[in-house]
Amino acid sequence: MRLRYYRQLNELMMENDVSLDAFREEVRNWLEENCPPSIRTAMPADEYPGGGRNARFKNPETKLWLERMAERGFTVPMWPKQYGGAGLSVEENQVLASELRRINARPAHLGMGISMIGPALLEYGSDAQKEQHLPQIARGDIWWCQGYSEPNAGSDLASLRTSAVEDGDDYIINGQKIWTSGADNADWMFCLVRTDPNAPKHEGITFILFDMATPGVTVKPIKLISGLSPFCETFFDNVRASKSQVVFEVGKGWTVAKRLLQYERTSIGGIGGGGQKAATLEELAKDYVGLKDGKIADTSLRASILHHRMNDRSFQLTMKRSVEESESGKAPGAVSSMFKYFGTEQNKNRFELMLKMMGSRSLGWGQDSAFADAELDATRGWLRSKANSIEGGTSEVQLNILAKRVLGLPD
Image (cartoon, rainbow, N blue to C red; front, side, top):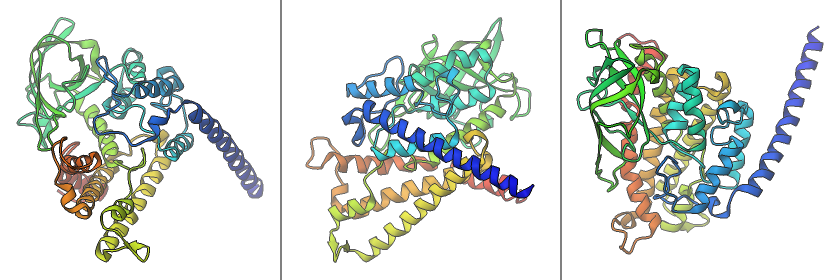
């Protein structure tokens, strides 16, 4: 019996390998025919394939790439086909990702729709909400933003005070959110509101969706040290949101909010780990530091780069194993805090090494300066990387979660 079992198992594994090989060939042929040449180059800092009602495409082939990938279901490859996905398995998705990296393809679609609210709706949304929102997310028709943090409710998010009061079939929302990434370009917001001010602070919170064009929504961008304004203040003055857009249950929004944060943290933690190939630190060192006997001339820098590369590889393998062990590639619970924390530190360290080897070439700022675009992007990217340790929950919050939920340490 045991011999028969192992024989059947081996046959199934062989069939699976053959199936994946056929799928790889199919994907490779499709990409060769459909991925435009300009999409196989590094993505400029001022291009963001987020889609939305007001999408502006500097490169027409960026729009074409989004349309082709969406039509094939490859913008959200593991989502069900009925919602615009391709219905791929974990293994097939890994094949697709590896083939995209092989040709250095830019992401076809980015944003909170596919990385945060979409997965949350797949778990907690009603059938009507899924039918309404998920296909639009997959096609890039809607740009989403997140209404979580408030001026007095950041790391202690459950202290939020934005209120929602019943009025017939709607809720009337009043309050303020801050650090709402991309709110100035967003079409819809997923928002945490307090529907029961007398309940304990982790209760009485409701997760609701509404159109940013609704009267009473005001957005003010916040200019950052990097010179960009991806974050905004958002104000609500008697904003009317339909009760039909409440996700899960009234007063149970904290459940959805925590799950969505796990998706967000996994996404942030995976920075640089699964998308387009960036210039390696070794390539930058060759340009800015030089080689000696075929090696990076600075021995200390060479050791630092090697250490970073070893950590990067170990991190990627750990993430891959976690995805394979999870159900259908879902966010891995509290372990997402580990990915978020370590991925954040890896990304910050990469930029620190970049600036160290660039020396005075990392001091550029103005676009009319004598610095190359890649040098200007590196400086702004270094400044932007500092926010990684804050967004999606600070590094201190992640360490607390790991201590309590993973290691089981006492309070």
